[in-house]
Image (cartoon, rainbow, N blue to C red):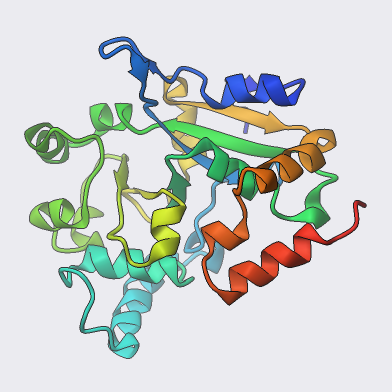
Length: 263
């Protein structure tokens, strides 16, 4: 799969320019990036969802996974109690779904591209997706909803007004991408400045869809030889597991990596 628009920094300073590439909004004269970001530790990783990784019958499994998650989780306090809220909660806790995790912060994405020391011999990658332009490729009722609200991404409430659940949305014939913000389930969602995307069909791959629409994205290759420098500087500016995954687990991950010797 050959994708275009690949940018490669030669230094930390160069990387800063690339992270904010194409983010100036001429209408208001300020930095207001139209992009969301996703960091991966290995450059060649495809954006395969956890649902697709389950196997060939993932479409059938999707319904049963979410149904049983709702049945056994006992969460009467979930916000709004829509299928979309449950889907976000399930993704947040590791259930296989068609959702992909993104962030509005290029530095949070950079963290995920450099969080695994054992993969420092591999180039990493940051994907930048123009979520504002996604609406131009949505069905009319989805696009009209965004226009009505004056938003570039959906909330779970907005989605529930249009579709009762994923199965209903999946009946749309066209292939498209939806970006939506989860409710603030906990401080992790907030600190990671998180946003989700999903494809209209469970088996669709975002990488393949973007092949047809190269103006919607760019990619930054993170050279392996830069990873230690990037990692140490991110730690110094407090972009680390202790902040992004509040609690004892995140603290332990940060301390383990922070005190690991340079390989």
